[in-house]
Length: 237
Image 1: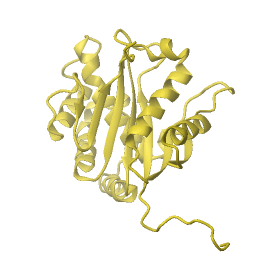
Image 2 (image 1 turned 120 degrees about the horizontal axis):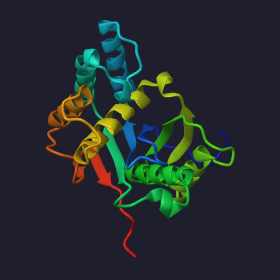
Image 3 (image 1 turned 60 degrees about the horizontal axis):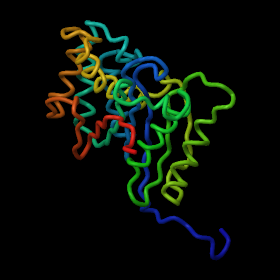
């Protein structure tokens, strides 16, 4: 390395953030963008791999496709998350209370803005984060990876996000865990307006997750050391 070239200390904090969503941002009343951040992703992901091997269960963890026979397994996955070190944050959109699509002019830019704000709030001082985001079809004019990375770094005025990569959720257990948390948090909001049942396996898992985290309800938002469920609102004029 050239003399005088600045280097980062070996102790520089690093993390991986997994960004996923629940619902269709262009049409659903409730839509949520979630961010699961792991400082040591290998610990939780290895534990999940061992659970898969023990149960001989290698299906994708996908809240929307959960069946009654898989409820017990999903609860074990929740137990693994609870037992490990992580932070999770999400923006829950209720389109009747505030519509980011209308505010920002389209679903793609709305999704980018929500993801950007989540990441800005998730970065610790001096921390470097690699972001893995769920893949979804978008026009060629949409540059989610580049735009989110630049927006976060510009806002924080430093290198905070090293790269953003989109990939299929079935290729990354971390994205599947982000889906589980994001969807389970959103489910209660859908229940509150009669858009989801009270006794389905999804309802049972959402209730189980809240109980294991010691949260009575997410409907008014919730924040503690590991969870930040925020309700999207337009800023006051």
